[in-house]
Amino acid sequence: MDYKIGMIVKGRITGIQPYGAFVSLDKETQGLIHISECTHGYVKNLNEVLTVGDVMDVVILDIDEYTKKISLSLRVLEERTHFQYHSKKRKYRQEKTDRDGFDTIRELMPQWIKEAKTDEARQIN
Figure 1 (tube, rainbow, N blue to C red):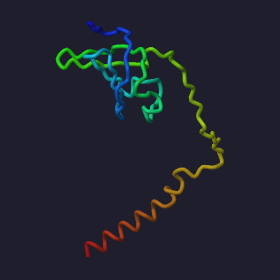
Figure 2 (cartoon, rainbow, N blue to C red):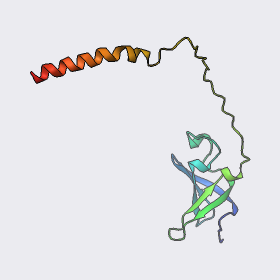
Figure 3 (cartoon, one colour):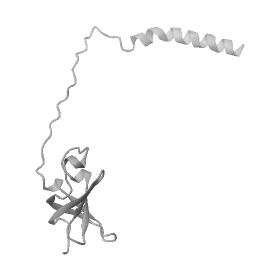
Figure 4 (cartoon, rainbow, N blue to C red):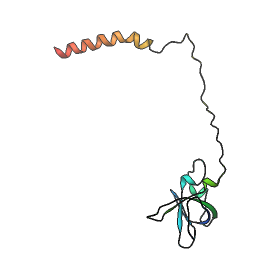
């Protein structure tokens, strides 16, 4: 069979590795579904998503002309789900009377300068 980019074909999962799953398209042709192309979102363990022997539709993403490697995707066939991120950050209102900020540095700076000058004078002598 002549495979082309964008085709949807049936394939059987023949092996699972940490980086992706190998899919047999026919007796002579095999492709790879990269872990990022298995499903929308984060996949920690491919064995939780796919099983060796599963037969499923896959989309051909790319065909390397020189090495004849075929990149496949399941994610393209999924309906995209929208994730909403809710920040759990607490919002603190800074009181205008609470003005620590640089004030403590401003108060300590003259003392630091005086100490630095006395240390420098000791090193010269």
